[in-house]
Length: 455
Image 1 (cartoon, rainbow, N blue to C red):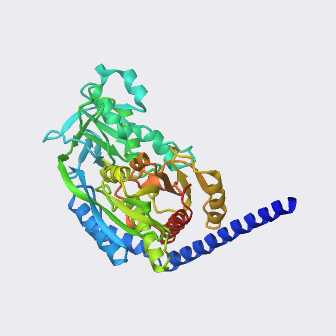
Image 2 (image 1 turned 90 degrees about the vertical axis):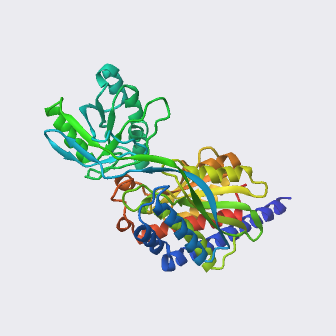
Image 3 (image 1 turned 90 degrees about the horizontal axis):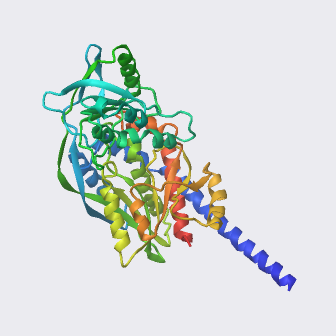
């Protein structure tokens, strides 16, 4: 009996080693193809320079859809199609004007969703606060009729850049509405940025919790320091701002979808994607042109190597992540209601085109330790070590209701919040080698999921 048990152990060990060797060989083929022949960097150049920034509802967003569809077809994807999505249409209008009277001008950016000022602009005293608690202590009587200046500093004593985003982000996400509820007529938010520079960061804000919309802008970190110093010298100083923002009716747009069909389980779907839209400043290079071209590279690579995945790998360029997530919600509803397809996993890249460090596993699910123990040594060779619970991605989030296991590419995060939602998020800030390293990790991971499933 003992000898039979030993033979069983030896056989199991041999099968496991053989499987790992097969995966290791496949990974190396994928890595070499992307690092030597990858097209993601060239595609990103075309998207950034040929299309540019592409906020949903804009002509550039429509051009990006046509670009993505054409590139997928040219790369020989098995199927390519468009999924209709109704998206918000907000325009910034003529460049914003900001001035502290008696001091000088400031470079400001309207937050996405802001309303315009009156035609001639608005002028009011500024109340500086460091956080919501300080604003509440001042009280509505003091705030009423003034401009609230949220000067909350991005924390530097965090390990990951996104940890700082989670702390400072609320002052952009719903700070303007909280100020409005206390009677403020406008708001200024210190940019949610880890950098100390002159680039203001835009981004969406919302008025959904009872506050009336007010004009709201971001100011750069250097501008925030300058404004704060000026207000200390003259607490009664008035700020003048002029915004020309306008919201229009929703318009029709599309998710761009292409796939390589599974050879054994074609109705089991692995989604890989990023969001095609970007804010209307810069070129949307890291956010999220990088994620789009990396996702496209996954399928291009498998086609180039004639590697036929067991399960269908579907690339989606989602529309409208930045100010509504309608692309993600629309596809998520499809995944939930599909009678013919089972969406087993989804991998999103929306954290920049920097060096890959790991894969986050959405906390809504538990990925069994056996699978992780198999994956870790395979990826460690490529400098990828962090497989832990974390956010999968905004676009793929609605797929959770379909029982889909959600993952997110986890690049090095230290520089991402320097560029996020700024005019500085341009193609020249992306390193080709780092971008292609990320694409190779995504392709390896999608291949592994296709071959092994998620059970």
